[in-house]
Image 1 (tube, rainbow, N blue to C red):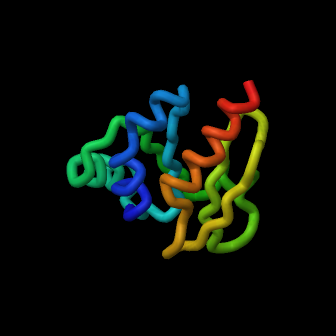
Image 2: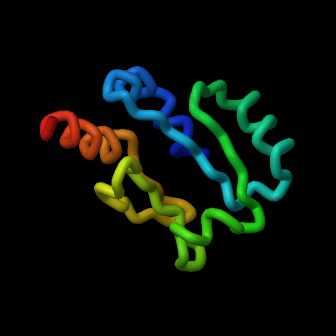
Length: 103
């Protein structure tokens, strides 16, 4: 949740880089209703999704209790994360800016 708040502060920076952030909550026990509560507490333009049974997310986050962040197009970088410490907006923006510079 803390990561969502932080990333929301730099939403315009991500938009300028043509990046779309999608948050898949695997730990949200209340499912879609829980996401609605989160969206009311933290107004966001980002897409929120849930995978409480870890049916889809298991394929890309295979270790127990991992909360990695993926920059997708082709996988450019995996930024390791834990339940308490996840990637910062600055870390994600650095990866995205590096992609823009390579164009």
